[in-house]
Image (cartoon, rainbow, N blue to C red; front, side, top):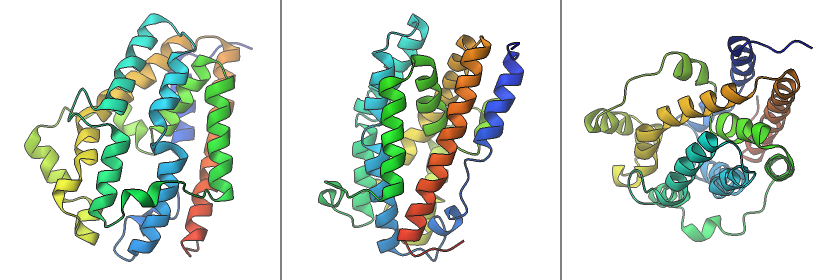
Length: 247
């Protein structure tokens, strides 16, 4: 099989990411969702991937990819686990701070009981990051897990870095502020995402596309991304059902 060009592979990967969009998201980001429903949603998100996202990165780093990839993973890991490039707190801790702003105590996020679909998705993430090769794991963790339906726009037409005033304007318009009145002081997670996410997206895509040059690697990445999408959609279906939402 002939390898795809860089542009062909990118387009096929982006076509998969175009579908990382779930019918229930307008409910979760809208004015009708209750605090009780939000807590179900956020507890599953935290236990499935937010809490251990730095661990996923460290697993890929530990597979000893090429030095440029290791360096980028190290920067990403350092920020995720310490906040050392931004506000000095790990991203999982900033997530829990945001939860506190909604009235959800940290204790609510210990020993979370995963829904069956959530457990299946988490077990798949563990399998890919523990047993898979570094390149496929890199694509899943840094492109699929960190990315979303907006990747095509963000990667092909990146916006310039935002200054502090622009970041605060976006934070003030966040749906948790508009719909639930969360105090802005609890939203440092949103701030750090706005500070670093654009560069992370660019670096993630560049790293994968630079090293995925063989046909076998390319097909494995595309197949695994598609598998991840199917797991993710089932996971989000499960959370929506648990919240009493119907398509």
